[in-house]
Length: 351
Image 1 (tube, rainbow, N blue to C red):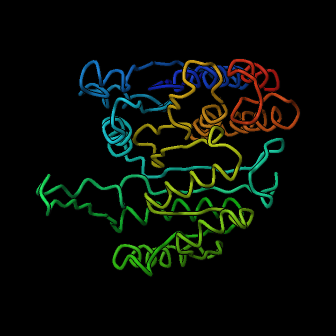
Image 2 (image 1 turned 60 degrees about the horizontal axis):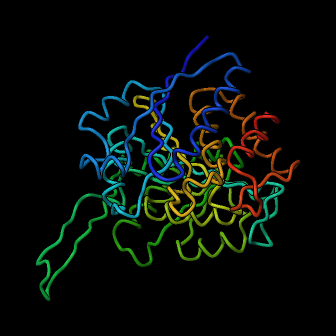
């Protein structure tokens, strides 16, 4: 039996509560399809930072390098600044392992009410492709004259031809396999250097993908259209900052950020890719056993697909759709009173 070795990073808050359901689903669907998993868990978290002064050990990346994939629960705690937890764990993994595609599928499921009247099940099904390692979230910049009247902060955006081109090619190729439509998020009317450069590269790559119809939208108008016309989109490609904001907005359109998955992909597979729910550590509900496990389970389905287990991945997403359409099992974020365990058991039964 083929065995996939997965690194588990439960992290903080509800991360430790949603990863076990994802493992249960992986083990169940793997047994059904004739392959298995082994797991190595790491206690890298804000709790570790408070205890030892670092989110992960100095050789942390070496521990992950040999794994087939990484499954992350959540990171963040009120006692640790977000920039410390993020730049101490997630961003080093994403950048060192060249996980330059952040993939966030958006779908309105039957049985989940979207806050938008226009977002109907079966009609809203698109993907946000976010550039994940450069753009607006660069490390270039600094603070000067701290505490003085002339104090200033400088943050440089970095857009490279190779970095933008590779994520655009991924997005165009994904659109070619899906509905054949791509929308690029831009703001070239206000950001005078990086966004016109982005637009030029979109046009270049679009010419090499004639099977895909593409357009571009300024980010402010695009955010409005996510709300007004969510069914019009197929693949949306965006820079690091724009993609981050749009994908969270899109998750809300789908009914709950608790169901949203994410994949941090190294498409060349020279390094492991990392999969995580979008919802964060949710310290307000941590320890109560009511966290929605769908985001982690759907992330596990993305992991399966990346490992070449497409049929198993479809079984998992079909089970998610079935438990929402055919049962009244709902965690509190979806208006129900099911516990994490009860919801997971119902989904496993359908799987």
